[in-house]
Image 1 (spheres, rainbow over the protein chains, first blue to last red):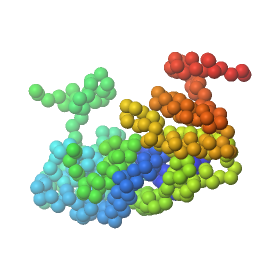
Image 2 (tube, one colour):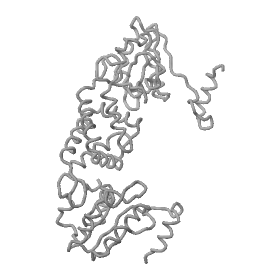
Image 3 (tube, each protein chain N blue to C red):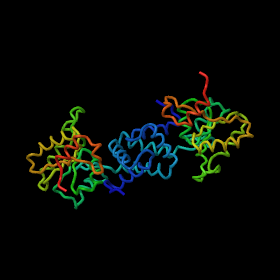
Image 4 (cartoon, rainbow over the protein chains, first blue to last red):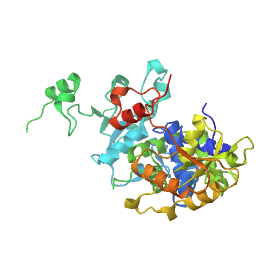
Amino acid sequence: MPKAVAGPEIERLIQLLARLPGLGPRSARRAALHLIKKREQLMTPLADALEIARQKIVVCSSCGNIDTQNPCTVCTDPRRDLSVIVVVADVADLWALERAGALNARYHVLGGTLSPLDGVGPQDLTIDALVSRAHGEDVKEVILALNATVDGQTTAHYITDLLQDAGVRVTRLAHGVPVGGELDYLDEGTLSAAIRQRTPI
Amino acid sequence: MPKAVAGPEIERLIQLLARLPGLGPRSARRAALHLIKKREQLMTPLADALEIARQKIVVCSSCGNIDTQNPCTVCTDPRRDLSVIVVVADVADLWALERAGALNARYHVLGGTLSPLDGVGPQDLTIDALVSRAHGEDVKEVILALNATVDGQTTAHYITDLLQDAGVRVTRLAHGVPVGGELDYLDEGTLSAAIRQRTPI
């Protein structure tokens, strides 16, 4: 425990900031000082934004997205293609796909991936809700947009098995060379996948 | 401007978090999601801590430190050696020295360093207040704990000149090899200084 150099209120602020991902004890101290210096421009608006977020943010009961309305903006968007459900592990993945703008479908947030080692089983994820949504009459395709890790792919296989009777097409994201990526730095698995799934120019 | 994927309240929270030093747009998004997921354990306490800090934090009118009382905890500490003033550029430097615990003196925060290129002149810093404090009858030494950069050393020379008639000893931090540092990675200036100021074992 480093020596407390400021009052307990400031130390508490530093300790809370240090619990944010991406900030360690040292950068939390810098962030706290920055907040204190920019009291009107940053500290006050941030305190207000946190208060508003605390009151307003809800989890979408349909897809698991985080928003200030339920059902969420994506689920209530009339321009979305209702025949496709994109399955993601986490809200962060949903946001990443939305930023990419390559999809115009609705989502389903699992809340994680199956991980026997960490004690995460099917009952800890929203897999039942997904299966029931996939049986909806509009749904024609379920895209499994899960991480290309062991846990992600295990989860994808598990869901694929469960959806066999749902009468939907189950797909997953393509493997390959990242855009802008250099072959020299890629692992063998990615290169093999990129060769196997090569496409005509 | 990336596409907004969440409600305006969440986007606003992300934008404010991105203005903290050490957090970029991507890590601010991760931090916001983390806050939302840990609503009770983290978001609520952080909102409260910011609100308390906003109300309570003041700048010490004597030394320029940041605290919840004025004069600050350091200035009112009866065990401090009143004969020494440690001059720092910024509150962060004061905190760093306090963490090191090598000093039992009071401080003087300049609020920056002289930087003609950035338009920072003597009138932008608390140099006048320092000179007046240094003329106090108790004060025997002023330690210039400023960065070993061009601006820091310029500021140190400027202050040294001003304090010539104050009847105090003016010192600066030693240059040398950082503890745990490897000679091979040090610049020539540091090595030369460490040789010149070598000490008997």
